[in-house]
Image (cartoon, rainbow, N blue to C red; front, side, top):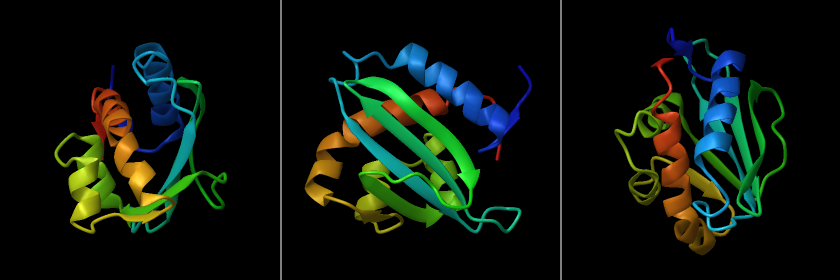
Length: 132
C-alpha cells in the first residue's frame, strides 16, 4: 500500500476500516463517547478536524475534514504536529494532555479514564502508511 496523506479522505477511509476491524466492542470496553480533534496550523494552512464516535464499543462515526466538525463529547485542540506525533505513536495522549500540548474541552476526569481506549485507537492509526 502506498502512503496516504494524513487526514485526506483516503486516509480517513483506511482509518475507519482498520479501527472497525481491530477495535472490537470488547477491546473498547463497550465505550460510548465521541471526540473531535482540531488540528491547528496544518501544512496547507487550514484548520482540520478528525471526529471519532463509539457506541457500545463499536465505531459508529469516523471522519476528517475542514470547516465545522460534528458535535462531540470531547473537543481536543492542538497543533497539527502534536497530533501527528500522537498518531505516529511518538507521543502519548495523556503525556500530551498533562504537558499542555493539547487543550481539552470536556470532562477532564472522564477523559483521563478513557485514555487507554484512545491509546488503542492511536496504535491502530499508527499502522497506516502515512505521509505527514
